[in-house]
Length: 108
Image 1 (spheres, one colour):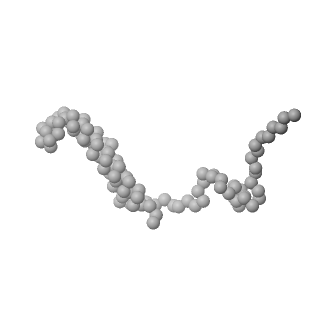
Image 2 (cartoon, one colour):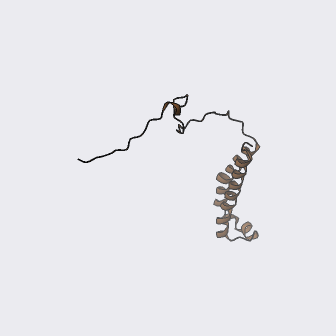
């Protein structure tokens, strides 16, 4: 005769039940309390402005790099460097603003 044992999950006992029907330690994906949404403040509008500049204005400027060769040369960049620098600057600024806005709006 062979003894075979199978692992069975134990159901939670009555004292481990929560009043809402779930078990203690169970994740339901629903928060216990939902706060009302606040209006966007100046930090949010600053972030929106940075997104607009990064996604609309800078790409248009990149399209006109060949026509702005004199201005680019006066700044000390070659055309190749301008193709790298123009998109990089707003990306760094957007990242810094988004981290600053997220950290400054945390509940203290």
